[in-house]
Length: 504
Ligand SMILES: Cc1cc2nc3c(=O)[nH]c(=O)nc-3n(C[C@H](O)[C@H](O)[C@H](O)COP(=O)(O)O)c2cc1C
Image 1 (tube, rainbow, N blue to C red):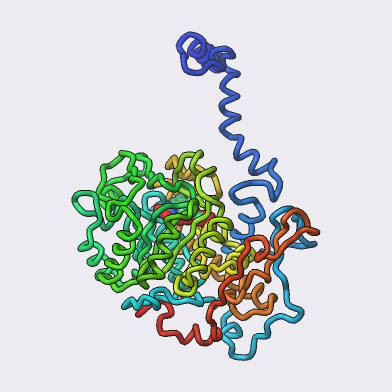
Image 2 (cartoon, helix red, strand yellow; image 1 turned 90 degrees about the horizontal axis):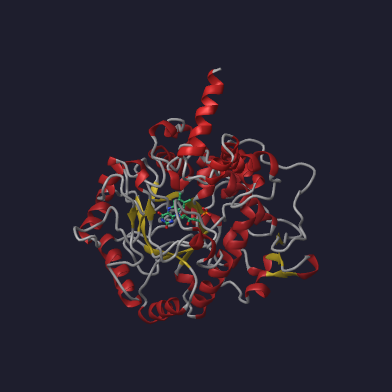
């Protein structure tokens, strides 16, 4: 009886008082089913309908590999590959007839996960505190605000265990970034954490920040990111708590939109001067992060660097396929080039000016898988940064609701209730284990190709299906350049380097 009364009430509301939804007006009661089914559609497709290799940004096999690696579970597959290895874009790594032989007492005989960067940031420009990242895989920029306090804490504790670094993201350095892991301080046009009264950049704050936080190993200036170049950061008001408002110096509950341009510089020469001033004042290597499209200003930068010997110590190239906490789909889908095209264009340009050796090239954009990383290294990358792969290692289920504050995994939300399910001690172990497993498999692939370190991968080591297997092509044919050889004198040399993990 009560159910009937309730249904009649809903029907009356649908027909006479509802002006917003035509379907529920025209089909009272049953019309609601449509909205409900639509709302659970993504989950239904993810769990029951989509096949293993179908979903984007990361398919079930990719997610499963990260989950299993992070939990140190069996991440192998049985019976052979389930991929169509003849499909367009498939990567092949050319294995050597006999793999690289690891001698007794070689660093890999002692620790198969030991894989530092083959280049040192800041050595060429003689910075006071050069930095050799102790891991080739690191956590990419994601701010406190976009991610929860518990997620940031898990990532920071995780990089400490894995000897990697953690890029802060645009939201400034929070207490959750200060759990012992190496940090790369990242800022964008909002200058959060180093913001002057007028909203511009404060060198005084920058110096103080670096002095009081010696675990900051380098500084990354964000020019743009693959998901929204030219857009500036967006943090929805729903995610701005009192604590975040205080750290960023903004109002509680109001959307924070960073402008597209920097106030501290407005052209390439000014940017180079800005980089040099920060490096001089802090002693740290300074780099830039950007998504690549047009090359004119990059060429101006390369010319200036070649002429003056100044400029960024590292360049992080983000692919158009990169992730974000929030961005308009028109930007995320269309603005800026995919990583392979953006990176190859940029690398070729800097190489043509003789600059490739002095810059540490970092890649980001779905590269957190050993075979993809091998391709990136063959093209000239020295390190990779991972964002969403790192999130998945600590429990992200790819619900794709980072922009709503309703992340069910407690990672991209400020809801205390949702965060309560995240145990930073356990999750930090998971991130560390994912990084270690990644490095171990990457080392094994490197050895299979006959090399000691992935920096020795060259364009002929990797082939890619241009159309089908009969038309596969080595990377040098596809992208029309050869990588400049990275000076490398053995893994032991890297292990003994005084700059490994920064000056302690
Ligand atoms: C939740 C989230 C927040 C992000 N925040 C930032 C940011 O503050 N600054 C930035 O430069 N990139 C940001 N990114 C982009 C990542 O740092 C990275 O460049 C991009 O996601 C590509 O890496 P991936 O494919 O491993 O995720 C963010 C990405 C995600 C998923």
